[in-house]
Image (tube, rainbow, N blue to C red):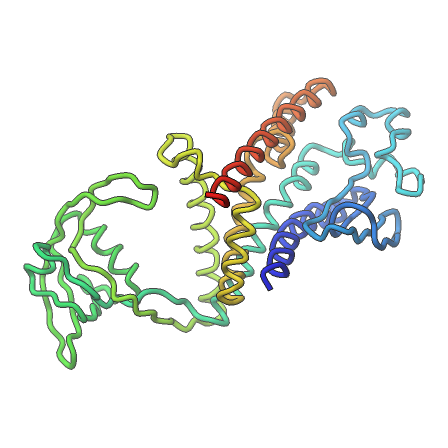
Length: 368
């Protein structure tokens, strides 16, 4: 089950990314030489129009080959039409108007951006399906433990209390209570509490205390001194509510990725915490043992992360191509083939170094 989940998740995410490039290219009338599901040797293929559709042996992704995609085809002229990139798999010549490199810069940017955008759309769709079918699940605002010498203990709050409202705002999840406490900035909070069959109202003032955040940093924040009871509550959602919440969750996944990247640059997150393919496989396999709901949730987060990573302005990645096209649009001049090739080599070297380092970290954790 774990192997199947890994193949479906990794293959599906990359395939959907490439599907974005393919569909937008076709929409804009750009020639596509090949669209492949998988990598490596072809198992099966057929041709429709001027495009060859391939099923390959390694089911972990896919790729799209555009007509005239090579930087060598950047300049119009008879020589461009003789390049291999301007011909179909059977050697048939693509018309000049179908070549990617001869299209306006905005069209090339649309095709390149479509991959990451489709990853964001996929994340949104998966989250929507989960919320629409399962509802929104989270910790209930029920207190499992009251820390001694804390504002909560002084105010008479007890373990087992279920907090209904904070300053008149209804609470559904523990996260809602956390937001109210963090937003109080040390001002008193009025809590409506259900205690057994009774309803009591208690005023409590959060205290600024030091704590460790998710990145291991020591920060000061308002705290009551309470611990959640680990009770799960589910909120049923309709289709419209699910659609809105799935967008919020997709954005949260992107923001978390951006924050993590910033923390790595600031060296708050140590470099040895960077993971690669082995870590991703382990995470998918672990979720598969618990059930498919966790696998889908992880797939949504990975899809959002894949979309963001591909937008980084690194040559070879989609973001690097977008940066080059933006420069071309501003200067109204195409970069020379030599400059493009140098940028691509630099990008490949950067990605190779990062992949080797991440795999080393994975192996070190695996055998530790």
